[in-house]
Length: 114
Length: 113
Image 1 (cartoon, chains in turn blue, orange):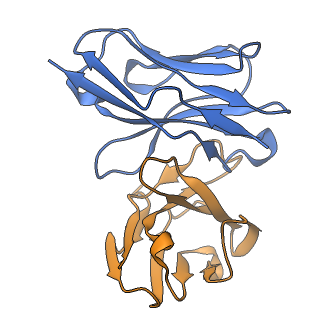
Image 2 (tube, chains in turn green, purple; image 1 turned 30 degrees about the vertical axis):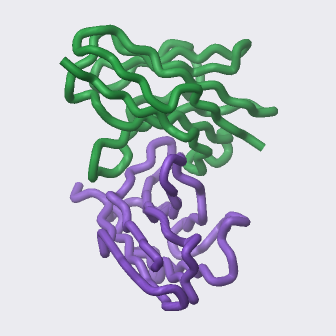
Image 3 (cartoon, chains in turn brown, orange; image 1 turned 90 degrees about the vertical axis):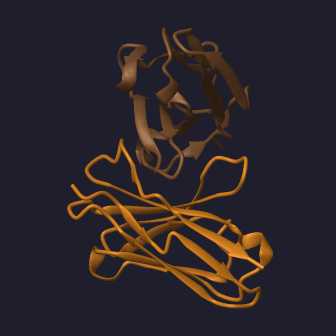
């Protein structure tokens, strides 16, 4: 069985500061990895995904994440955050055979302030 | 692309009542998923359809839950004899092809009193 751990439930950060949201997964097989963002009163949106190939993946809104197989991690980073990045961020994992059947972490609330 | 739409946005019901939610996926998407999200948790997989066939159901989906997707278009999720533990946000998502990107609706928030 797969599982995802998001170590921080909340991350406060000042605008224009860098941020890293941590995600660790466990799986006995190869995996696909995803980050989704949920803005208030909106559906989840895909930020980025790792399927194979380069371990550094770039997504929308200036976010990037690095797949580290040895540490079973997929941390999300942004060099300079904006107020509009305030949202809930979910890391998710799936089996490549059933790509859309996701196992989500509990989420990290990113709160950006001036 | 009009997005995935869910109806209603909010539903308040009394324990023991039946409720039904509707999801309209993006028109060309052949796969449709239902997830459930409780406060402080990430979404949990409930079930999914490929066209009109229901291919998998989670163990979370008790016998009181039933989902349909007639003609491979919209889908309904019915909960019979609701319990307070059913209170949650019910999310619908759709995709196509290899399904590496899910498109989510805004969800239906169910409150069971």
